Image (cartoon, rainbow, N blue to C red; front, side):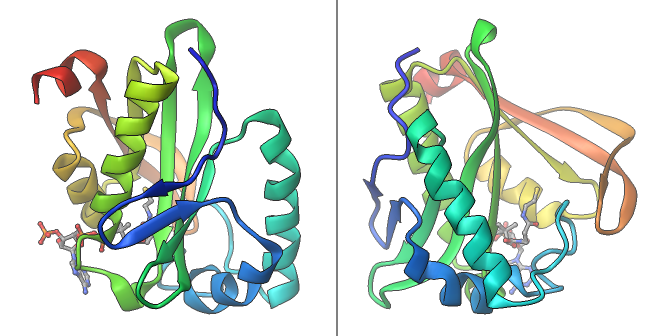
Length: 184
Ligand SMILES: CC(C)(COP(=O)(O)OP(=O)(O)OC[C@H]1O[C@@H](n2cnc3c(N)ncnc32)[C@H](O)[C@@H]1OP(=O)(O)O)[C@@H](O)C(=O)NCCC(=O)NCCS
């Protein structure tokens, strides 16, 4: 693999780019403080904009180590509306796991599939990834739909295999291989 870090990716309606400290207000207001958005996530809602700023600073510092963590900017509104990132990488099998979240003001308009598809293309074609996987709580089928729309196939359900803000949960594993992507 050839790691490139969080380079800017443009789609029809979105710009995926590195976080900046001045995204903290949008991040806090649009998704990080929301009980609704964080329901099936592993971290609690941010209690103040300072928590969002601290998280962003940590991400900015980690860009030096080629971390993949994109802030999703709405092109027309010039607003930070969500994020998508590589949660973990297994170098020996060129495999990574993706996580994402989006402001609930923008749900249901296909924004996350648009962002995820662009990230999949980048990771396969420019980084040399061979397998891209993602998991979701069985009770969070919306996220499963995003994965399906992006070509990730169902591989199984890890019963009581994860924990999020709802407690211990069944975790659905989906993945797309480079060979699946090439056939699309
Ligand atoms: C999961 C998530 C990223 C979906 O993003 P999105 O851009 O809304 O995705 P889509 O527009 O493709 O919608 C996906 C599905 O959500 C459902 N949905 C759409 N609009 C909705 C709304 N307003 N309210 C509830 N569900 C809705 C539909 O089932 C849709 O599938 P369909 O298009 O086949 O009908 C977003 O809901 C989110 O950020 N959720 C909170 C964080 C989270 O759960 N992250 C994933 C952790 S694994």
